[in-house]
Image 1 (cartoon, rainbow, N blue to C red):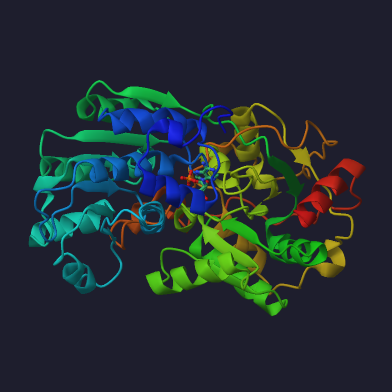
Image 2 (image 1 turned 60 degrees about the vertical axis):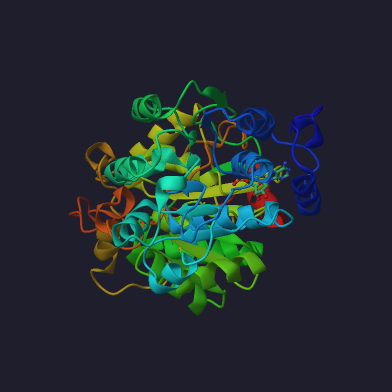
Length: 486
Ligand code: AMP
């Protein structure tokens, strides 16, 4: 947070200052301090900022200010003045919710639209005047095709999590949307990283932008304690259940690589007496919304999510993230752990790692530039605690969880048990590039989403004997006990 500047210093209108104060914010975050005055002046912005930095208010507040400052001469049905594009439904819903929170005294009408739900209620909502539209690209184009939305009055365009939109294959849709917008407009582009692709997009889109970068790229939050537990893939469900129950964790987001894995884990946790729900692209929007709100309200202890479904989830002060499997792409690890340790609260991220994932682990450690502590779970004894599996189940397990993409050198599991390193490095330290991967826009391209693709990759390894996970070192115990208290 910026220690000297107040929201009032940024020049925001009174109805917005009132809403900010009601939201309990006392000072602008660095991205807000930099972006707000520039956006108020009408400038373009290229910002490297992840979820958790306060970026949403960083663009929403000055946009609301501009709308208040220059009221429309006439407001037409279905013709927004501001368009915010996001990669996923969840992020779209959250951004629009922020618009409502910050704009509650501003008499501005906003609407969210995304795919995977009935289009008719959206069509009726578009029948009224509209100021801010938050949309995923696919559904927006559906509406544009049906002429239920008119984008010719857009004065400000925001591309939120633009890097993810590109990752998810939305570039053509984005270009189609751009072609429907007036040439003269203000453009704000937010991205976790400034890749060459993003720079390419920005060059064609932005007009003399200021560049803001608020978090070092690919560094993990100082506030997140990180640890790794080496284990067999086939033991993970029992282990995660054991850890959550044993430590009394009350709000845990668990990432699995596959939808199938998410379902199976949630079922197992429920059997073990925990309240758990799975969210992924095959669940209906209403099931996902229900699970998410149950999780936020504390009615659901464990939310099991694929990367894609977890995209853009903003859960205040989430204490605990568990990686049931490591993600294939090291950057996604940083995005995942960015779900915790946010907005000044401590958090902890524990990864369950099978031998086949060691290469992925090394890639992650290289990316975050530090080793992650290996943790042994003191009261865990797989010999007695792992539920007996049907013959072939371990193989099935592995087939579903097999790392993909970078699999070939990921240790093919023949022979040695994982080298058990002593606790190394320091827990904590690094930084969140903060963005997890997300759900598809509706159901359109879900199959090509990177994290849920090729589920049925061939198994490469045979099952190995269980490692003997035993005593925790004091530091390791501290990580687990700390996370349990968080
Ligand atoms: P975002 O990066 O936009 O996803 O925001 C992350 C979280 O920070 C959200 O829960 C916001 O409510 C919160 N937040 C945004 N701005 C501030 C601020 N100035 N002070 C405290 N919390 C904030």
